[in-house]
Amino acid sequence: MNEIVATAPDAIDVVASRHGQTLRYHGLPFARVRRVMDRERVWFGIEGSQRRSLDDYHQSDWLKLLRDLQAYRTESCRDRRHWFYRAAGEAWLESILRRDISKLDPGLIVAPLHAQFRTSPGGPTGARPIDLLALRHDGRLAVIELKVSEDREHVFQGVDYWRRVEAHRRRGHISTAKLFGARDISDESPLVYLVAPALRFHPSFRALAKTIAPDIELYRFDINEDWRAGARVVRHGLDQTRDAA
Image (cartoon, rainbow, N blue to C red; front, side, top):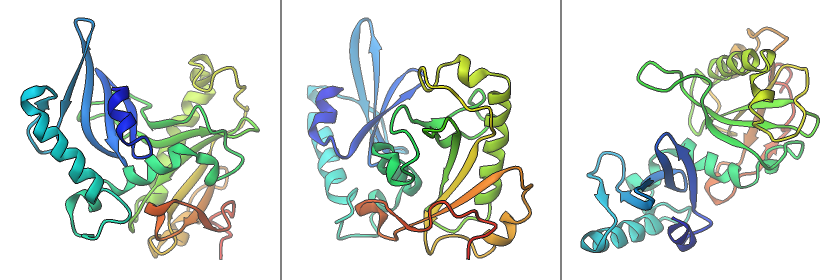
């Protein structure tokens, strides 16, 4: 696995899964790693395609996949209609922020940072995972929900995740699990960070945010439209959504 990551360390990240690790290229899953009989095994293939074992027989297919990812899953891709470029945009943005979450808010600690954090068992009826769960230097938890296109549910998803994380915080589950190592978790409710490119917030975003109870602290983060080249906050990262102009 380390050898694969070393082929493109700025693009490939590793996410823990139920039965091993998932390798993602700018957020797009392309390989699975499991340890079988004390030996590391790798299967590769994009979602919807046939999974193949990484062995000598499939070596040419493996190399082609890597070449295609390098060509089309990049901010400099010439064919912006290619599926590799358009797919899993939120996961791409997540992978960028995972490398340095302080670019979103300098008050956030860089590590540990939990991606696709589940507050309940998975499965067909399981709740969706939270994009990112982070901790501020002051001990406040931050629930981070990402969008790269207009989505009317942005606010409500953030609030749903807040309720789940807050329930676990009040019961002491997050502190007991040492999700952030030895760092203390503040006895305050989490913050909600709602992130999207500046022109991709839904037109009803502000109106919907105003309907949320004031004890839930919502913050809007407008990032640059060309975020694939590197995400940065372009508009008052810590303005409350209820007060943002």
